[in-house]
Image (cartoon, rainbow over all chains, first blue to last red; front, side, top):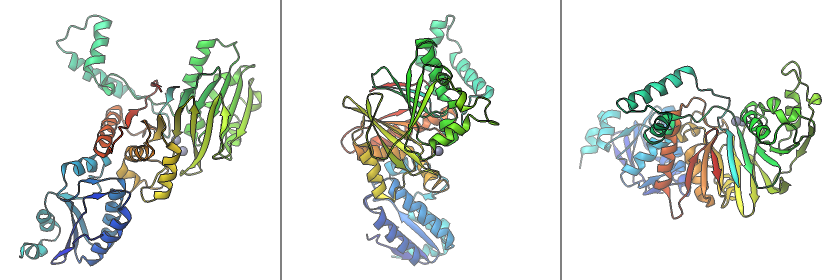
Amino acid sequence: MDLKDKSAGGAIIAAAPGRIDLSNADQFQVALSASLAKAGTALVLDLSAADLITSGGFRVLVIVQKASKAQNKSFAITSLRPLVKEVYDIGGFKHLLVVFDTVHDAVAKLDPDSLPGLDAP
Amino acid sequence: MKVTFWGTRGSLPTPLGARSVRKKLVNALVKAAGKNLDTPEKADAFCEQELSFAEAGTFGGNSSCVQVDVGGPDYLICDLGSGVREFSLAAIARHGPKAPQTYHILVSHVHWDHIMGFPFFIPCFIPGNKVIIYSCHDKFEQAIRGQNHEPCFPVEFTALGATIEFVKMEIDKPYDIAGAKVTGTPQMHGNDSYGYRIEKDGKTVVYTTDSEHKPEDRAEMERAAKFFRHADLVIFDAMYSLADSVSMKEDWGHSSNVMGVELCQMAGARKLCLFHHEPVYDDARLEGVFKETIRFEEITRADKKLEVAIAYDGLVLEI
Ligand SMILES: [Zn+2]
Ligand SMILES: [Zn+2]
């Protein structure tokens, strides 16, 4: 699975696929863990293309969140579509997974030093 | 088939306290302000039409006990939680204490909340009654006998007047119990637990509580979905939120409403009933979980609609 990683300073911006469920959660976990390994300071997962995330997908987000903490890095998800936001609320993830409206907001908060890299053409 | 829920709370009985009752009263009185509720009928209609279930009632606090009426003369019950006392009072009120009955009881496992009602299961005290207790669990006979024993209980098991038998079931093997076909399956839970698939006249009820399902264990999910296949009703351990079940409470042996929906969708089941409620949740929170589960089913529905219900002490579902 290709998460189209982009780097901005020490941050990695990854883009989630259209659907993450039990059928592709394993590949998603491998790919997102690889993105985390590449990140120096922060991993931001852009969910703007994700129509639906079910239990398998959210579990991976929690695992990567824990791994990022262990590696002293930050992790956040951004740009949740309305249905994904609903599942996030229903699943009770607000104390576990940090959400930002946009990738820009996430980088500005988690790793402001990397912001110029994000804004560069 | 008809399913009656006598106890629906997980882990331990959870009575509604004075403060909760007062809160409900205050809320109802404020909502009724200015309305002319001067007869019991008008007040009852107000409760029915203007208040939510959580505002006007309660999910109840008895621990696991579910009666499955499969149409025959004998009783069939799942688990001996504190709810079994209420069941036994209703059964005795129906027949009178002197008419002997046969009670078939399926035991999921022997954690306290699932057997604690047995010492107060009145039919056991009455000679002429027959009580047959079934389980796939290795230690169910030892645990149930051990409960009726000093210093924990003053009536010894051997002093009980009814004829009591224990039947150790093998997993995956169908048994004829109370006229229904009953099959047991192992579940992921500390000290083991077992789910039961009950089939009669083309209808199927699955009783599956105290069971953890892990989204990363695809093979186990598929095995569970096969056990639930095309069930008319799946009574499901939905104690935790999905977030808790994959983080802090991982490996605590319980599942979530979200996993219940996903498994029932995989299984092509007709109806999911949320069960084994978290003792920390109040009525408003449980009502919220119910609404969210209905919404999650809508969001994730592929073709066939899965109906969603939430159990409460006293709920009757016709299947
Ligand atoms: Zn339990
Ligand atoms: Zn248990």
